[in-house]
Amino acid sequence: MNKKTVIMLIVASCLILIGCILFIGVMSMSNWNFSKLSTSKYVTNHHEIKESYTDIEIITDCSDIVFVSSAEGSPSLVTCYETENMKHTVSVTEDTLRVHISDTRKWYEHIGINFENPKITVAIPAGLYGRLSISSTTGRIDLPADFSFGSIDITGSTGDVINKASSKGSIKIKISTGDITLENITARSLDLSVSTGKISTENVDCSESITLKTSTGSTVLKNTLCQSIVSKGTTGDITLKNTVANDYMEIKRSTGDVKLDLSDSKEIFISTDTGTVTGTLLTGKVFTVKSSTGKIDVPTKNVLGGSCVVSTDTGDIRIKIKE
Image (cartoon, rainbow, N blue to C red):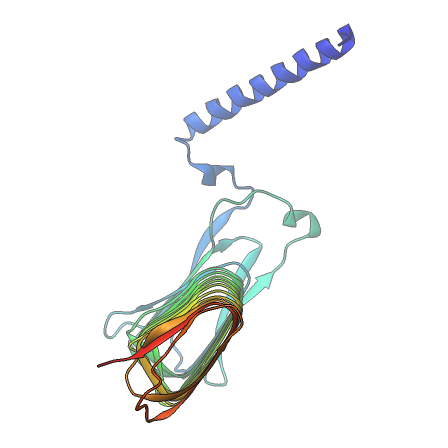
């Protein structure tokens, strides 16, 4: 190693050391509050709603969205914690409460450091509303059990959705990256889709169909009732526990295990390329099963009931009937 290279390495090391010392000093002075390093300035804006409305529409970019029930007799209030150049407009038009993002950033303002999450808090009286429509790029969405809607339609790119609000109609949730969780709700139909993430339902009563789509991620249904279940996925396990579809159940996976724990349907169709199929059904079935390289263990004697068709390429098939 020549002398010039050694000198350059020593200078670089000194600069790195000085940078670390300055960083530690600055962070110590700010009590290690990383939000103070953000290049965007945040403000809190309150929007009191005096007009009446039935539907709610929210279009935002990178904000968490939280619904809370307001005190009895209090007006609706939308609170936006947001950057100065990405504020939201709040209005009531055509019987709809609208919260829309207004992005006034210049091109160079898209470059920066941000350690804080914008947040929209919707404080409205508990009760039944009409259509709820939410479109969000990045952020968590939280709907508590205080509310119910005529229909719920949510789309997003990155962020979790936790929904405890029921719907008289359909619930449609489509997320690219994030988890979808539904708890203690009723609905006419469910249509849940996620590319990378988990879908889970618990204590759900659906009068019609449940449609589930995943690319990479697990699916878990607990204490769920409906007329039909169709679940399609590429990579990921699916578990049904105390879940009943009155008419039929169709499950398809490329890679993933299928487990039925005290769950059932009149007609069952299960297909997985790489994965095992196991579980306990509530009623007898006429089994038609096939596995290319796995073991098969299903009831074969004195079996009456609907059909259960199961096929795997690589994986065991082990199903029994509850005694």
